Image (cartoon, rainbow, N blue to C red; front, side):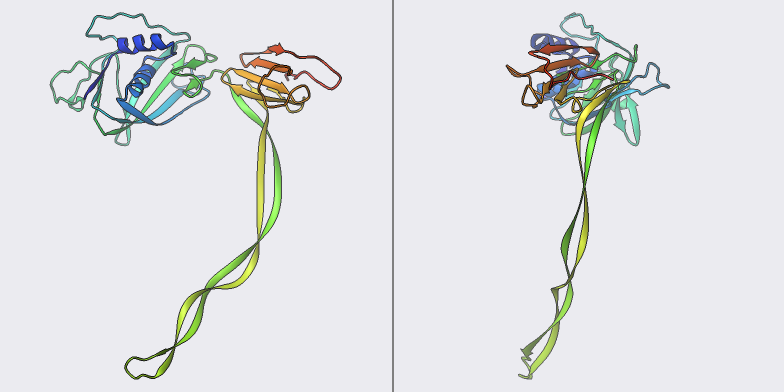
Length: 305
C-alpha cells in the first residue's frame, strides 16, 4: 500500500514521543523508517562542521542510503490536506540546507518546499502535489548538506546518540599505543611429484606415472607487529582532558563525559553509589558535576589543560 508522508503528521508523531527532529528533512526519514515505508540501510555523517557559508569551512553533511518498501510520497513541508498547523521550530537552527538524491554520476536537488515538476516525478507531465516519490523496492542514495548560523552550534536530530549530530565543537581522541613485536614460524607448502604404479587395462602390464601433490617444502619466520591503542583523554577544541594521567577512567556520551576514579571507584566509567565520580559537559569543561568525591593524598582531580 502506498504511503503518504506529510510534515504535520510527522510533527504530531514526534511531539507525542518527545523526539528531537532538527531539520524538517530529518523528520521525513525518521518517520518513514518508523512506519515501515522505507528501511535505512546505511548512514554516515560529518561529526564536526563549522561552515557558515557554502565556500568556507567544513560543510555539514549526512549521507543516507535506503530502500523503499512501498511507493512512498513525501509532500512539501507547507502542505497538509487536513489543514493542520502545528508550529515547527528548533534551536539552534541552520542558515541553509539542501536535500539531494544520487542521479547518475551526480546529484539532483529535491526541493521540499514545493511540488515536484518534470517527467521524473512519476506522472509524466501531469502536475502532482508531492515533492518526491520513492518507488517500491528501489534503493536510493541521498545526502543532506547544511551551513550554520554560528560555527559553534551543535545540531541534533532524531533519537540523539545513534543518529547524526553536527558538532560545533572539535572532539578528537588522545590515544596511547603499545607496539608489540613477535615472530611466528610458518610452514611452507608447494607442489611435488609423486610416482605410482598402475596396471594398463589394455596391455595388462604395470606402468609407472607421476601426479602432483601438495607437500611440505620447509618453513620461514614471519614477523608480527601489533599496535594496541587505548583512549587516555580527549582534545576538545583547544583544551585537553587527560584522565588516565590522573588515574580516572572516562567515557563520553554525546555532551557528557562521565569519569570514575580508579582509586575511589572501580574505574569502569560508570558513576555508582559510593564511588568518586565527575561528570563534565564538553560545552563547559571547567564546571564539572562532582559526586561523592573525597580528596585524599592518593587521588587527584582531573586537570584541564
